[in-house]
Length: 192
Image: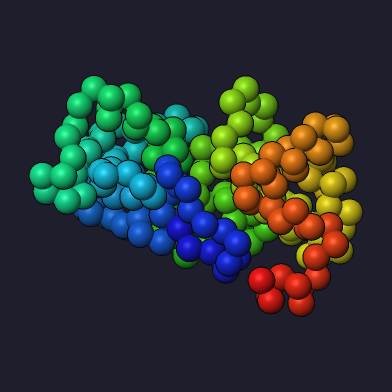
């Protein structure tokens, strides 16, 4: 996925939304294969989805080595397939991209298309890089539009301020948020 936000760098497992393409079938329909690439994965995933049950689900999955002879499809590779992420990315591609509709939320949250399986406000036990990157994106966006960043992000994620403060500390530690995010200006951000 590409983003207008220069601070957004993809992490392993992110959907590369700009590189999703239809391999077969009619444009705008569930019938056909859609190739969904993931950043850092040695495979190209080709999927067929069914959206008739409300939430998208995979009806076909193909794993193709991106470079011939460089990878092997073994049980570990199959276990590591992010099925829900692939299904939601393919459904979003069919629903929005092939029908020429833009999702306004993608402007505010550049991590949305990269991780369509992570819905905001959902409580998760294991918080990974994608979560802390999303915290940093929400904090930065709120500051950019003139809102109180901590209050905005806490409301967005549905958590208390002390919890958000722990998340901000982790986002800083992992390099997704500048240490001086609350006082940095546009001038200081450009000079670094």
